[in-house]
Structure formats: C-alpha cells, structure tokens
Length: 344
Image 1 (cartoon, rainbow, N blue to C red):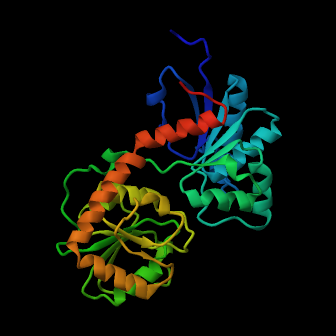
Image 2 (cartoon, helix red, strand yellow; image 1 turned 120 degrees about the horizontal axis):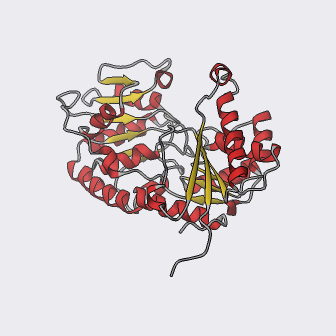
Image 3 (cartoon, rainbow, N blue to C red; image 1 turned 90 degrees about the vertical axis):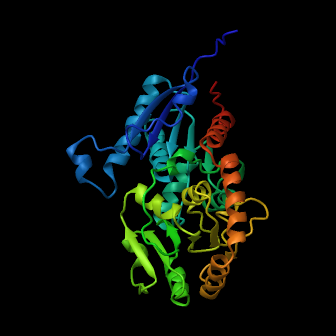
C-alpha cells in the first residue's frame, strides 16, 4: 500500500564536483536531492580565496534554496562546509535541521577559529564521523554531546580499484605508501634508509616531503592521476600507512582501497584507524614516530609471504562487509533517521 508520507527534500552542500549525486540512485522515489557546491559563480568568488568566498556563497545559496523548497534537512559534507552552512542557517534565521557528513579534522582548530566553530557546530543536529575515536575527541573539543556523533566507516566502491591492467612502475618488488593528509613520511623514509634491500614507492604531495632527504631506495610520485596511483598500489607487496600521531584519523580511503586490492597494511598504531582492521589482523602497528619500529615491521612483513596473504584475505573480506558503498549507504540513512528524517 502506498504511503501518504511526503517525500523529504534534502538540500546538500559539498565541496565535490557539481556532477556528484551522492545516493540519488538508491533513493529514487524516496527523496528529492537539491545539490549545491563550492563552485565559484561570480568573478568575485573566483578572486577572493581567503576566506574562500565561493564556499561562503555556496552555503548561503544552499540554505536559501532549502528555505524556498521547505527542505526536511540541510546535509553539509565536510567540517568547513558544515561550519558555513550552520552560519548561513543562523544568519538567515532558517529553522531546518542541519546534519554533518564526513566531519573530520586532520588537526583540531584553535584560537578564534575554534570559538567560531563552537558557536556554529552547536547548530548541528548530528555529525557523521569515520572513526570511533573521533566521536569523543570532537565532542570534547567543541563542547558538544558525544551522543550527537555517529560512526559510519568510509565507503569505497569496489569497482574504483578495478582499473585496466597496466605495467608495474618498476620491475623489482616494492612497498607502497599513498596519501597526503596526516602522513608522517619523514619517519617512514628514515626507516627505509636502514633497509637498503627494500624499495618504497610513495605517492604524496611536495609539502609532505619538505626537508626530507630521499635515499636511493625510495621513489617519489607527486600529483599523478588516480589510475596511476591505484596501479602502484595493485603491484606492490603491501602498503605502509605512516601517520603523524597515535590519534590521527586519516588514510581511510587508502586503507579500504588497499584491502580491495588484496594488499596487507602496516600502519601507525592510531586510534583514528583502528575501526578499519578486523579482529586479529596479523600486521604490525607501530607507535607514531618510531623509526626503529618501522624498520622491524617492514623487514618482517617483506620476508613473510604467508603473513601478507593472511592479511590480504582478512582485509578484503572486512572491506566488502563494512566499507562498501552499500554499507556506507545504510549508515548514512541511519544518520538521517536519527536526525529525524526518514528516507524511504
């Protein structure tokens, strides 16, 4: 029997490409999605970058549209978009629930920015974060109730790593490390200097490597297409994920992608990524900044094919069960439901 409940309108504000459609396909007939982005619409928005005027304007456009459409909720994707959406809702006096998705800080704000964010985030109904440890950390830092935070692991479509067969970047075996946010490449590269028999290929940004002396057994790629980075991952022995601290919550997409590629992962022992490993995952976790720990871990893993295989199998199974797009969709819909918006 058909429901007489009205279809909810969700106004979405993100920093993603204008063509991004989130969960439109899964919710046909269940929700209407009204998308807005940070894309600059005027010459002034293109010129003023600090603060990013296009982001501010995009938030106000989203909230104005939400008021016009009588939206059931405003969904802001990322911490900064959440802040500006909250400010726009307050300034325009729009009484629509605000839900925050992919709420994440590589480094927690301080000073005036923190004061502004505390005021803005108090307007948010619910926050979706990508690790359990972030819930209490953000609640405490911004003076919010921890009950307003909800874990939804980062969802990656398995097909995103199913690229065409490309030749390996080098012929000899190598370890890979990929990503930019929250990474500690200095410690990893210092360890590689003590492991001349091993080779590392790192895909990073130039600022990740400032002041670091690169040894001969480390090859660096910067600003390469995603397909090339994925190819480096697919041909590696295993992946290293060095993080800045024992609380850093970064590298989730890279972790899941490596699992889909059937690669074992050696990582910093950070609470921010603990939710992305199955119980009993047999790979070393190294304390942040521990060069000697990385030397031992990398050497041990490179020499143990059976251990690499066990981790690859366990990781792939975990990713399909907990980190797929389907799993992320279910978690996202639960965030809406707990925010008072029923989709479907």
